[in-house]
Image (tube, rainbow, N blue to C red; front, top):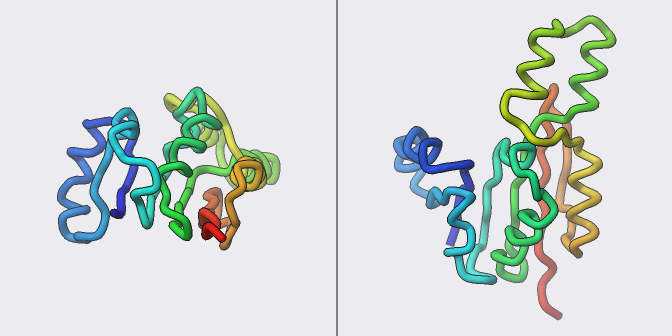
Length: 145
């Protein structure tokens, strides 16, 4: 099974047409994550959700547990340090910084912080990169040896 986690049902409805055209991933609101069986997913997409979750570590652990051995999770979001650096260099306005960093978020994260959390859970980091203000991480649940 391949799933794309979204923050809530409203976001799921707004993304429904996009996913139907992709035809790859089933949309699952984050609050329905417990409905997914353990070790049942080959691929999980988590785009710009981590900073809106107060218990991020527990949710990342739950997401990892839904992966089959060898399954991958793709996590992306806004890297707080990249936004801060851009502000200091004068490349972004304070107003825009506020929109990127706050706007309903309960935390700020960085590429290195999310990578560290995933490694602590025993995940293998396949790739990680920065693209502007965004981080993109691919991690895999190690194959059961």
